[in-house]
Length: 439
Image 1 (spheres, rainbow, N blue to C red):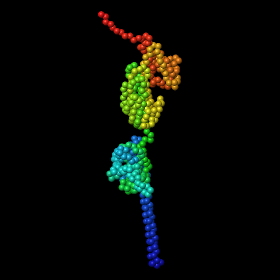
Image 2 (image 1 turned 60 degrees about the horizontal axis):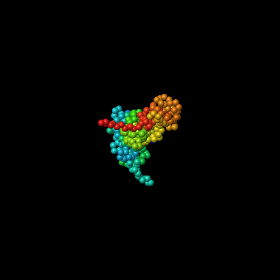
Image 3 (image 1 turned 135 degrees about the vertical axis):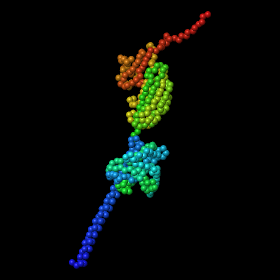
Image 4 (image 1 turned 90 degrees about the vertical axis):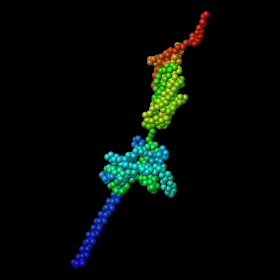
């Protein structure tokens, strides 16, 4: 083999080696590029946000979950932003909040601030066939930066972690939702210069935004159904006042919840033969002429009391009935103003004023014909044959009646009959006595 041939052969071998080296280097670069692409895709699909509302309907909590498990310094959140969307309102109804509390990490809180990150009722961007309109929402952004709040905590994969909470201090206007970066009408370019949106950078992923979607998007502070269980009682302080005396009915209306009651109205049926001498309501106003008690609002557990005093001017039974006839909320176990005995929104009480009965006189007591299984009693003893809805009373004593229903006469009051001090008209003649002075 000539020297030239040997040199060419050696050069060929070096060329082959260099080609192999270059090929390997290319493969390494390709692998590195592939790894970098995979890392970038992973960074953009790590964090989700969620929002919840406590049972008090005031406290909102914002959470995160991660598709990757991160520990130590790799789990450090460098920056984050959460934007919420609330119904637009003005004046006293404008959405306001207080008491922003960041996640507690070994006694140190994450510091989340809203600062000037609020835009009320912004304009949407106009386009062909779609003129700009005022959006019916207010946007509030909460921000976090590790430079002002250097806290670190491990981020387990697929585990819900609370980031911060805040409390609504304004009236409930409806749904509060998390901003949707890809679909909200206030997204770029509409939001130019205001920067709403959700974002989070984590040290393990450098400056890449790891947030990519929401998993709990909205909460509603409006209760699913408001209800207020209203009930009433009637108590008479003196069940048997003497003729010419007085007695008082204490009427109580109570709200047992679960929600506050508004616009409560009660109708009091007063006895016609017993004049009202005084009345007093602890809440609301009472009109004696029509018996209407306008109570108004009752919070959960609150009671209202009405006191009505009567004059016992004639013998007989005085019955006081109270029924709740209106409320701004449904009652779970009764219906206002349906006059149905047995429901807890209607109650009655009574008092018995003795009836004077002279010798030879009688009167008839009766109960409605709808009652059955009737039995009249005198002084607790059965009156033989007294099983109809009427009873002719001819003598003194205490009369009661039993039926298929409880208390058919004026709320369980007896009929009290006493001997009267009266004379027959042909015996009792008015006599005038005149004294004459004798000289």
